[in-house]
Picture 1: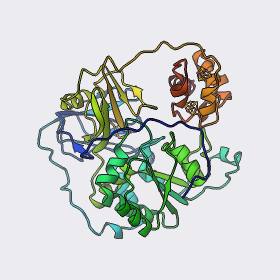
Picture 2: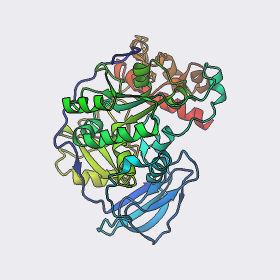
Picture 3: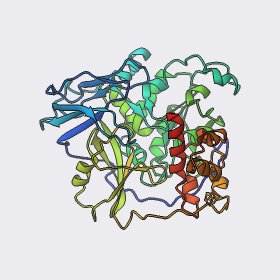
Length: 442
Ligand code: SF4
Ligand code: SF4
């Protein structure tokens, strides 16, 4: 299957990924579990909890519940900084070292006989969150379409559109990210089981598997996918093909009606390979999402390594586990090399949205003094959203946020290409995010 639409982008250097595909990290002594704003704690300080026990829940359909990722005692419930720089209420649990599960995990081999409603309930109860952009509870991607949002009439989408295309995203989008390839390599039978579950949920949709150059699409997997009626899309080795908005455009020819629209509005559901693994564990094993496959790199590591990390593990504890790091990391970036953002401290927990961490030593964390824009036009030429990043960045720099909005700042998909190509090292992505944040607070 080939490209339906082309896009502007850049070729990035290939990365080395270490084997084994995924390693386990030791149980953390403490976890910090952030609760979404609409999520309320259902445990109290001093309470003993077991792994997988519900600690936070919400009545909002679009908010995933939160479960204890270790067994132990709730020592505090208080605001704590998360990777996004917000300070949500968080449940802090000190481990008892036992990892005692609330429900004994066992595979239900008849999971494919479950009814649609039961699958959705299991998925919602497990709190599985699909990686974005934007991140959202996975069950919401498969729900019945809502009434269309009023603005969609203006862009010619007058009716709620049922999902007719499911894209399994197996592309590790940028350097520093290798979790999808690792999961496809190590858990390919789970991925196939996950596709069968989603086919039960959306039986009339076409399924497309988007493969990257991470070597995960081997011959046996290709023939299994063909047996399930899944088409394979092998795109160009060009960034940002792996980001959902661009992937959708290339596979289906459709564009998400930004800034307020979503993939559901155009009848598409993108499920990344890592979330598909959690989906299978939720439906087949009734396992809540208590961990995450995270890619770690930098600070002298010669290849990207993937670890299964308990949610809520604090970054500093992970650094201590990686005893082989050469040099003390002075900067930690959450996310990949193109879209990641530096963490303000290492006392920040891994969340369901954390895909990768890049550690940088003092030598690696180069600081650049940005210069004024020289109007070379490189950022304009490469922007996959067809924006004018040079103008937008200047508006944001000089606090002219309404002007930036008028020039479609909210259509920026935050791919970071403008910053990557800018010869003057202007902090383009930071300026876009700053402008968007200021507009959201206005
Ligand atoms: S303006 Fe946004 S979409 Fe365009 S290159 Fe920059 S970050 Fe990417
Ligand atoms: S790439 Fe940098 S210097 Fe060139 S036009 Fe864009 S912002 Fe200006």
